[in-house]
Image 1 (tube, rainbow, N blue to C red):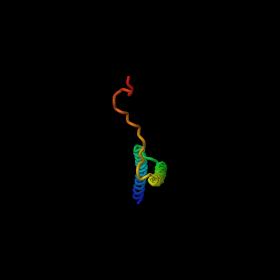
Image 2 (tube, one colour):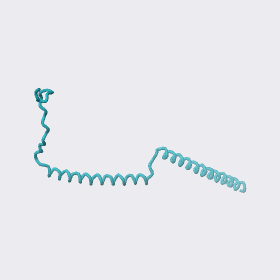
Image 3 (cartoon, helix red, strand yellow):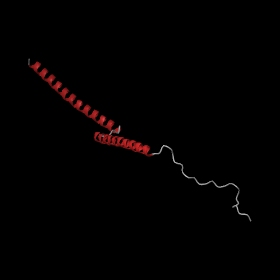
Length: 108
């Protein structure tokens, strides 16, 4: 019976060593995967979340400002349309020069 105990002890040691080796391999694989993912993400030139949210807030502010300006332009255009006379005014134009050559009209 003592040989059975020794055999079981040896098997337990081998199994324990194998489990330790597997956990070491697992740790190494996890670290390699983490490094590959970090390298992949850095190569993709992704934007940090804080920067994305800041730009998003700026875009929203710009959109609201644009909407306010569009309303303001519409009001100004309506006011301008009310002030415009229905018929366009005619402005005086310069008299066209008489055709008749280069003489000044004086006789010599």
